[in-house]
Image (tube, rainbow, N blue to C red):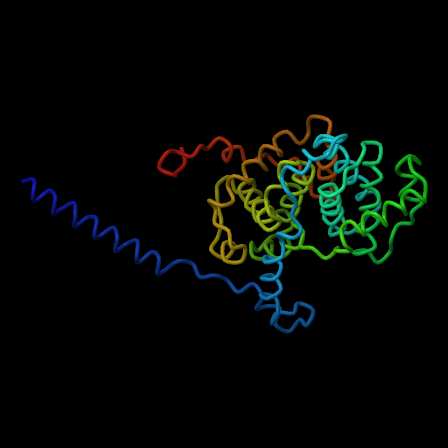
Length: 310
């Protein structure tokens, strides 16, 4: 009786393994997201994979140590958050390109990781970083006087220009770095994004710009996790397609730690002192993305000892 039972179990296991193998064979194929752009010379389809492989290879050069703030003696991560939150509002007021915001934050972090700054000069660093980012990304650059004015005339023109010289020399004139925005455009295409998903993804990743603890994640992972989190928010369940996994090079499991932090930021986005991103994305221009119900189920899940979810 025992032998018969064991044989039956083994047969059932073999049958299940065959079914799993068959499922692997009939998996949804990875979609070619560039096929429709073959005739668009601006899409550089023939080079796009090489371009993003280069971005992935070099993105570490745009990252800083996740504990760089410990080397600063007069500023802290809270002050950094206040600065970034204010700059997001300045960026919105001046109607600057998205790329400019991400490069601004990158320049600030890279500079602060190398140069000690007193708190009364921190806003000057932020304003100057935005000026540099504008010169790199924008067609029309705000004049120095406008940036001084929006800083409540806290600094002179000479101070801004002196800080500009210090920053470009400290950063060795390296402005060409892959930020999360670079990856967002590509990954949203892989996700076959509509406007709703796009706006929610950008809301989520902009929340992360303010949070110092998110520096530990690479730009590409932040971008992928923001889109995954937005998908979870809209769908009410986890969904990460083979196409998304293929083009981002991240599995769902690799995104969960970052994604859960993103959900926690979404949950508290409208409260506290730093609400610039929430206010921005609560407007009709940004599809009221901030008013979406957070993906609570992601933070409520807890990994069990076997590696699954409880």
